[in-house]
Amino acid sequence: MDPFVFHTPTKITFGQGVAASACDAIQEIPGCRIVLITDKQLLKTDLVNYLIAQWQAQNHICVFSDVLSDAHLTGVNEAVRLAKNEKCNAIIALGGGSVIDTAKVVNIILTLGGEALDHQGMNNLTSRLLPSVAIPTTAGTGAEVSLVAMIKDDIEGKKLLFGSPFLAADQAFLDPELIVSLPAGLTAATGMDAVTHCIEALVVEGTSSPITDCLALDALNRLFKHLPEAKKDGRNLEARSQTLVASTMAGMAFSSCGVGIVHALSHAIGGQFATHHGMTNAVLLPYGMRFNLGFATKRYAEMARYLKVSDKENDSVAAQKLIDSIENLISDLGLPKNLRSLSVPELDGEKLQQLVALASSDPAMIFNTRQATEKDIVKIYEDAY
Amino acid sequence: MPVFKNAEDLNRVMFALWDAIKADKSMSSQLLRSKLTISFIYREPDSRLTLDCSDGEQLKVYIGETNFKPAVEMFMKSDLAHDFWLGKVNIPLALISGKISSKGPVNVALALLPVIKPAFKIYPAIYQSNIVEENG
Ligand SMILES: NC(=O)c1ccc[n+]([C@@H]2O[C@H](COP(=O)([O-])OP(=O)(O)OC[C@H]3O[C@@H](n4cnc5c(N)ncnc54)[C@H](O)[C@@H]3O)[C@@H](O)[C@H]2O)c1
Ligand SMILES: [Fe+2]
View: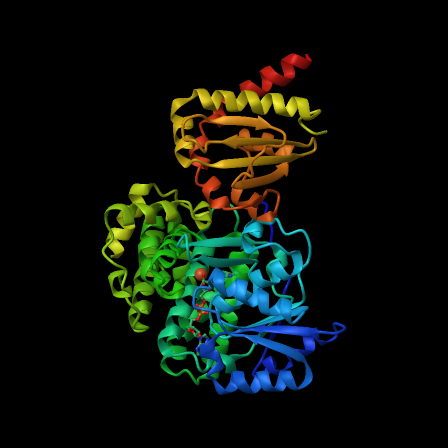
């Protein structure tokens, strides 16, 4: 067996209604003052308002809700200002990946000082951060357990990477009731982000382990079974639970082994055109999988058999069946199938070159099982357009 | 036992290596195109080596502190740097496990990995001639 490292520091509590006790997790801090990070859309939901009122009745909590989709640097800076003024010493993130990533980088700055850009990079944080709780409202990014955060630099039009075991929330509360209000389109898109995490984690080069394989494979199976149900009937709490737990498992997996070319290409598109992360992954996933096919045939075949989309066929037939079934899933979920449908403008000339440069230097690319040349990336973008 | 007995040994080998990379047109031209400034901060023995490609014309190598802040800083043990140049390091695993840590847009540096790979072939000879023979 090859050497590996697996790291998952977050305590995970799952169950209907568990979000209500999220504050208990950090209340013991003497003089606890909490900054709650969320977004405007979530503040419109009854459950989020009820939770905040309940928490505020017993704790000092100030609310920051100006997080934009894709976690912008400006949101981070504004939240830091508020939390400093309010002398906050603990953080709760209540939202999707954008909220949770914002909270992570806010926590870095509150704890270690300086500005976000001072801390960009991998494993350079020198100490534990302020106590933090993450409550995901999408299923999802897995950001509640992951060791990374991606923040959009609006000026440069690219995503900044922050990575450290200290970035994982101390506690994650997985409450399926909070996902019920997620609209069908976003249910499908965020679910496909989790599907992409599983598939990419299962074919990375040199970092996977029996632990990441096991988490990603089981999570993929749950998503395959329950994501269409969750999209069809958002109030189906069993389907919400299954997809929520699966997305957390996928987050634990990719945190310790990385993702791959689909994320690299998707980060570049998202950085330039503000497309939704999960939606962009869904479009690019079949193209990325076909690109890796010759290098991942055996792994794809194993996934196909585990998902029971293939039985006794040889590896190459089974691998092709996996790609077919991913395409079917994307169709069933009613998700867009090309970049044009995401309102990405025609890709040519300088714009295409810029995208290719961003994608080929994306950190996710070093984990990909097949090295991609600039020509390969152009071809995938053109095919996916 | 660390591979490099002291910082002088480490600096001599790394300086010679980067001299050879500078002399190789195909590697140096691609590095210069990146305009990257990057410092490698080594531990055990401790040293700091900085590459400056910022003017796009001349690749400059500095040992020790510089009077400019590099865009990227990479931190690792000197032994790991030696293994890296021998082509023996699983870079993704080293990054995930924290054996290599970084500050700044590490992606820019990672994108240059394929560019410097040809230097893996010349490193053993450079190491030999700057360490073993000198000491022997
Ligand atoms: N840190 C990580 O490990 C990691 C992993 C993957 C993605 N990400 C990042 O996560 C971000 C995407 O996160 P996301 O896909 O969760 O979407 P999001 O957080 O951007 O949310 C998308 C939209 O859904 C709304 N929403 C969220 N939950 C809702 C709910 N329960 N009810 C109603 N509306 C709700 C939000 O208000 C927002 O308008 C990207 O910035 C991406 O880079 C991070
Ligand atoms: Fe993702």
